[in-house]
Image (tube, rainbow, N blue to C red; front, side, top):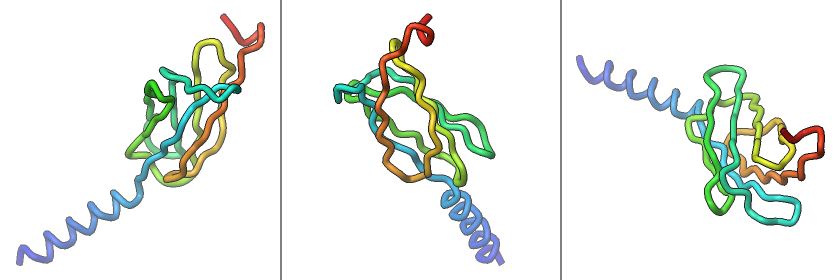
Length: 105
């Protein structure tokens, strides 16, 4: 009698895990240099906003990203904000431009 319940629970967990994936990539400046410490935010149509920062090599990974339409926002000191729609499970390559006078604080 326990086997069907365990099977249903395991199937529900597998389905929930399949509905979530990851977004990873690299953030560089216009000269091709890695941008470390950049703030990465991913917003989906459902679920909470997920955040991380880039490592010394400019790379990042966000796990547990919901499927569906996603918007990624990248911010780093001295650079203009970058925002674009991204697909889950895709490698994202971000090139940040130097901030203009009106974009700096």
